[in-house]
Amino acid sequence: MDLHQLWTIVSLPDNVPIVLLMIVVPFYTWYAMRQAFANDRLIGELEASLRQKSSHSDRLITSARRDVKAQICDAGHKPRGIDPRRSDLDLYLN
Image (cartoon, rainbow, N blue to C red):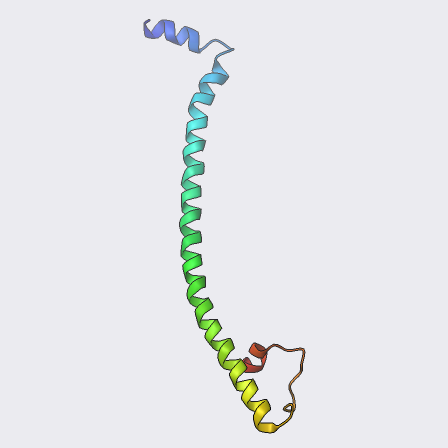
């Protein structure tokens, strides 16, 4: 089979969409996999960052709870200005 015969078969109107699909499908498959791997890499970086921040915030919350408990125990009653609807972290940060 020479190139002229191949071109005659490929250029038939019924075969043109098939030839285009043979080019487009591998390209978009490669592009989708490239994006998927980039997203996986980003998720891994964000999870590591979140784990680091989580351990830091856990220490802050524990410290805040300890401070609030100490205030309550020292005063013998609920300290003034503390809204029971607010969390321990809000009390610590304000």
